[in-house]
Length: 70
Image 1 (cartoon, one colour):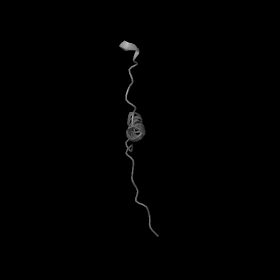
Image 2 (cartoon, helix red, strand yellow; image 1 turned 60 degrees about the vertical axis):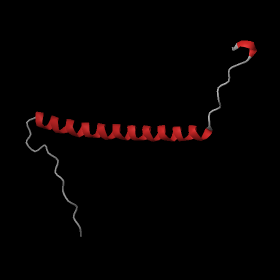
Image 3 (cartoon, one colour; image 1 turned 180 degrees about the vertical axis):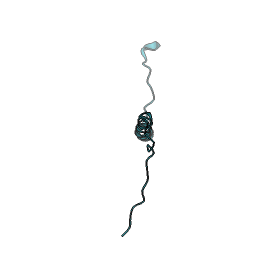
Image 4 (spheres, one colour; image 1 turned 30 degrees about the horizontal axis):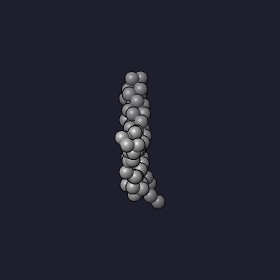
């Protein structure tokens, strides 16, 4: 408590700024989760290729086949 019985008061937060901050943090979190999912998928693909090569196989590369149009 302050002298003379006065209490210290903090200035009120503005609701507009809080909403913007929450939106920015939510966007950052979504980007972080998406990057993590992409990284895990890439690591799984590399692991599959390494396991194939460790078994002595020669055809470990993925083959991209174009779609057939009718």
